[in-house]
Length: 282
Image (tube, rainbow, N blue to C red; front, side, top):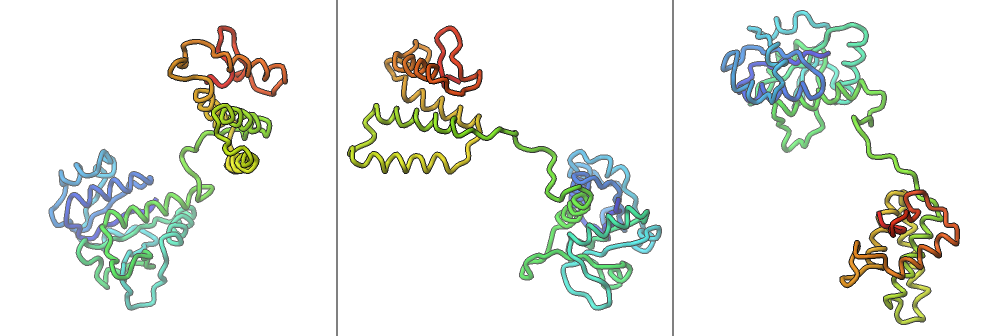
């Protein structure tokens, strides 16, 4: 893994936030060059938010040359153009380059400068290449922990099988069949008809077409249709005088009987169980 090198960091809180950013993305080796307030620093530990393994492993060096002496390849981070002949990369390309060198067995590092003005030109001169971030030129100054976070993220992302990979995903839901979708629409149309929604009557075909267009565009999953059927059932069959749980409304009983006789292809959860509970009662 790349080593993170902070050159003359000023605030313990910033060092702690750097440690936290590193830990978020699997980096653990932090080196400090002549920290202003000395080391150890309790403010750094407090700001590290339990990244104690990074804080405990910190090594302090008197100068930058000794901090990078055992490394094979080093990036210098900077927000402004420098004189010289060094290659300049963006964070994505730099992360991939670090990963490739790490795989080949090389020891790598990333240098970050002081909070106020970054790295001196002679310090950048000790690096192999430069990495810079595509920030707004009118406001290019990054907090040191933010800069470390960006590079740590690119390092981790470069090791994923896919750069879009996530640690968890949403639920897998089977798409609803057209028959299930039609069942929802028929139910809704019947409920609206019973309550006089389609007025004036000559406009009903167009109103039905509009409803069908809305309901067929979304690409519902089966569990989503069950939720909607439950909502429509509550609005259709129950009322303040006959609230859910008070009984088995006559209209619902007729609708369930019609559904069974038509051999609708509902799953077991939709089949009315014994005891008076019917369709769409989830």
